[in-house]
Image (cartoon, rainbow, N blue to C red; front, top):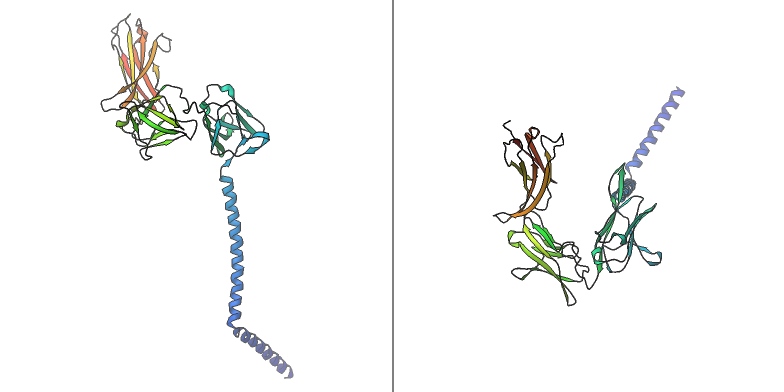
Length: 377
């Protein structure tokens, strides 16, 4: 009995202690509860903050990898380097040296009348472009890019590029010279047209003029605007803007006139040239001659290439092929390019009888037409 009494006493003692602990927990003050919650929130917030810093770091790393790198530098005197400005203003007779980082660099620059003044050297870690004794014809954009090559085929690396536009100013030659004295500009209703009156200094004030009737054409910025790097931009060309125009530059009272520009309103052919074929005679006898003419209509500024297939081709039958083209104005005021290819055969033989096939092709595609030449033999 004594043993059971001791065991029962121990049981009630443990039970009382547990009930005391529960009462202590229930008697926690509101301040204690609030403080405990705040501690838990701080722990959660610290975890979220650490996670946010990690994500931000990853985003910065990705953005840094995808952001294009400017790789061009301008070499100054005494071995100093600087990132070239978007636009540089130099004078004729000066020299300039540009460098682009990379072991395989491509360059683009204005076309030169004397290429000996320009040199490009690829070094181990950079490419060097140097232009000596600059002229107004050298005015334009100079750009470089990294080249990604897979065997003989290479492409531009869009993430490694550099560019700058350089004005080479000559007060005696305000306009950048044009190769042609009389340039043709095609006006299309579906795209802007540019009259390339570029100047050698952005300080020159340039106006646009019509030859007949003589008048200045205002450039208000909406229909027509001017960009010293491009020329006059006609944003919405129309038929009434056809004619002969020129530009006038004014620099501190000194006036200069550009070359003339012929503006033609062109029909917007969106596909390959439209082609037809015709023989001078579809029935020929031995000893006669025949002309087969392939005619193509298309964009006035797109060249057309002709290819022929004819009966005596594999036997190397002698033929004469002549190509020509001209611009023609249609009754609706549009200008188109008419291209012709004529195949001539003299002294017809039996080998010349059969199908004559012509293919007219431009950058938009090709059209194939055919006609047959018969003989009563």
